[in-house]
Length: 261
Length: 261
DNA sequence: CGTGCTGTTGAGGACGATCAATGACGGTGG
DNA sequence: CCACCGTCATTGATCGTCCTCAACAGCACG
Image (cartoon, rainbow over all chains, first blue to last red; front, side, top):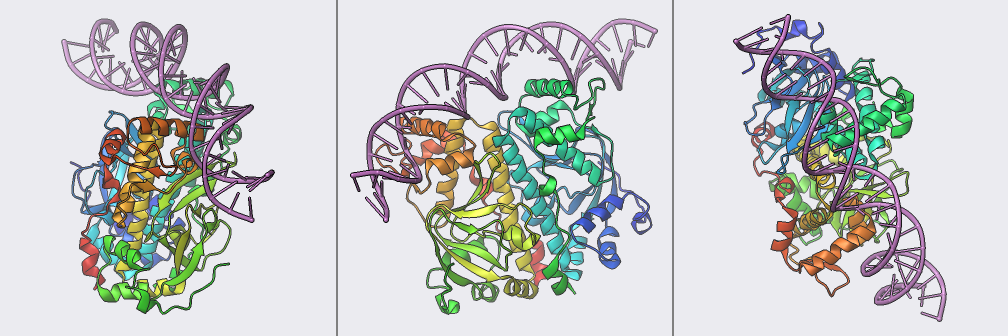
């Protein structure tokens, strides 16, 4: 499968690959060099997964946690009807399979697929267990990551159940832009296909396409490039009625900060 | 607001009120008398909340965790449009506001409302912190509770985004029956209004009503009683294509069982 | 005996699905 | 270099599900 790089991660940690993972942990309230090291040093770099392949399959028994380091992936499930439901998108720094660590059993679980070429890192469950034992706060941090996913899921539910297509698609695009910006990507390009968006929005591809044409007429996305590129964020956010709060974790971590030391 | 009963909970714990809470903790993998005591003894019984009132509001700063002890509640949010989106239902034993414990800040959070008259219990954050410190496994247990909610949320998303109305409503009903059975209620009565179901299904009340008439014609729900009563579960499950797995947690808790002691 | 909430019914219309076909692009192999 | 193929994007036409508006009936409550 994927080759293991025998890298000295401690050395690489700040070099770049794990930069976004570190940032993510920070945003979840995990700070302090020794704490971070405890996790970052145990993160093994795995080679890239090509677009369209599963990063986390439905079947295999997991022995390690997976972290997305580069690219875009999605949490999804294949339906009896043959369709696909995309639950959430993952960006560099995001955990891909916390649900397996916590659940420990494969009961029709969702899978994770690379939507662009991806790089992933892994952390052995044993290393993770030890890290949590050492720094109790880490359990809370990961729990919070799950909570954040829940929050996104709720927003997705509203999106699908309440908003009309134009607003719905705009909302999804806003979210992508926001999340990309959070990891330092300022460009308006959203590296997804209309198909991906259809599966996330619960709309047919045909209809997504029509919505895109409207968005182009409104001057919100580029009319020339084949890839999706937002050229007017403000307008897009207006259309979507976008409020990014559901994506953000508050900085404070009052109680466990105390009990952790 | 709600009066505090100065009860000796240790004595009451097995008497009945906390029976379902205990069962819930068990199902999440929290076992052993001393562990359970640690949490159950700290659970304060609060008086009941009448139907229609919020159990957990959006605004207030939380100091304790809330556990539903009797009745049915829902996690919901009020939309700009004036509508209501129901994310999840809560049954006796369920935690109502884990999101606040973990998040600790009110950023447009969802609220919890009593859909029937409810009784609730509370656990002070300080007591909870201490309990977690004593039994590390508890952090995992609560994390798992969150994960289970996530799982339900994903199922809800599929329900809303993929299934046609009849199937969708049936699926919701199946879930309620299943969850009620899990707490020992065998009756086919689902104590919700059509309005509640509409808000959970993302359908208009009018349409829900029409679906109900179909279900009655199909002999699935009672045609006589005003309250919703399922009289043919098998048929209902068929229509809904119901697979209860998303509601169940695997029993095993392999890794943390070890690191906990 | 009103007042409110929930449930019920009818009519008309909109939004989005489906089916089907075609176009554009990139990659592959001859 | 070109022919071929697969994936993704685009377009048109038709149809169905579900929404909205509006009115009314039943029941519970004070």
